[in-house]
Image (cartoon, rainbow, N blue to C red; front, side):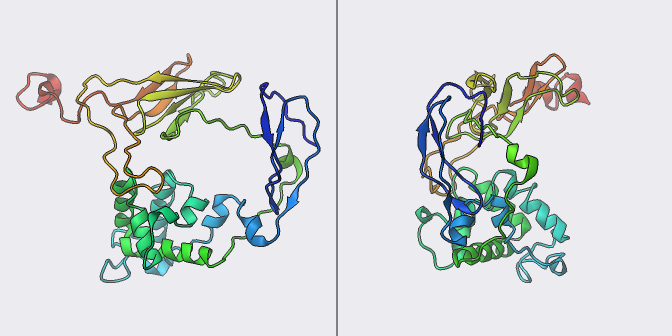
Length: 310
């Protein structure tokens, strides 16, 4: 039995999801209703695994052995000599690269979308996929910094094994107090944006702004701060303008068509907002661009401004 408190008055799709199960039929319900739900056992391990967290699928990836580092370059093992250790490779793969944006291991990343086309090999498919959309240049550059051929081989091997039927280990069912966790999620921006940062309190005093609004930063995707009131479940937007209308877009054109958005340039930010912070009074501070990258004349050589003379 589950009691979900504090639900807004609305109509909900309710169903059962769990490890070892497949999703049950969705039932439309409103708060105040008592309803028996029937769990559906997965017919096999492959069906069950489709609901495992992305990290379990990501655990199947096989990174180069420690003995492969430092890399010997394109003429050797394909790993760049600047990759001095396996730890540095993992940093670029995880927090310093791919996983800074992507949930590696979810279905769109562990497999190759059919919309990308047909390829002679999985290496070719991965080479094409990382050039997709407006982040294509960043993704391609990221793998080049690791060693493109070695990185493509690693990802292709991972996907080939998954497509061939390899499954991750089954996660344990929740037990004890874990069974009492209630998670609330909100879509609080637009489908074409992404959240780079969010803030809810002063990091120096996490008692600031209790039950208050949450503020986000959309980086290259849009020029507004999304605001979420987690109590009322309401969202709003605060525009972030630039001072100079000639400020260029933070993201360029798609390197190659996206399997989801084609050639559409869905990110149109000029302010490129980052790093929102709350101070002790609950005020929001953030960093953003206001002008093109070139320094104005008063900051360049020949100016009398103290900063230019320094």
